[in-house]
Amino acid sequence: MSKKIERTKVKKQQTRESHQESHQECHHKWQARIKEAEDTIQEQTLIIEALVEEKASLLQTIQGLQEDNGAPVPFDEEWEEEPEENPEEEGLEEIPIGEGEIVDK
Image (cartoon, rainbow, N blue to C red):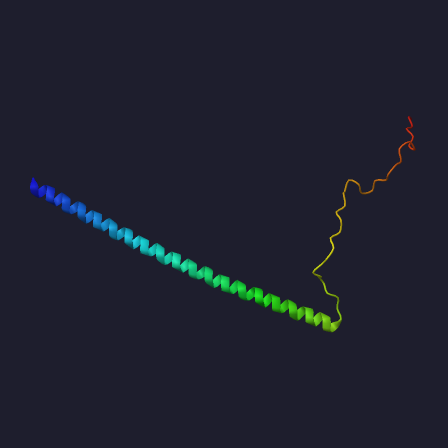
């Protein structure tokens, strides 16, 4: 009976070690994926920053060309918004009170 208990203990220990190794392997795989995702995000951030700088440079070039050619600036920093019109009020006339007649036909 003692040998059976020993074998069971050994099997449990082996199973426990196997699970630990599997867990560590899984942990390392996830760490690698996280690192890869972080690297990708960092690369994308650098690309976006470069594109923003390129856009600013192109806008300056366009503005300079427009100024050289005397063209009006399409968008000014301070532009006025047109007031919103109420569609219900459109086409309605104001009728002063007391001046309208009701006619029954």
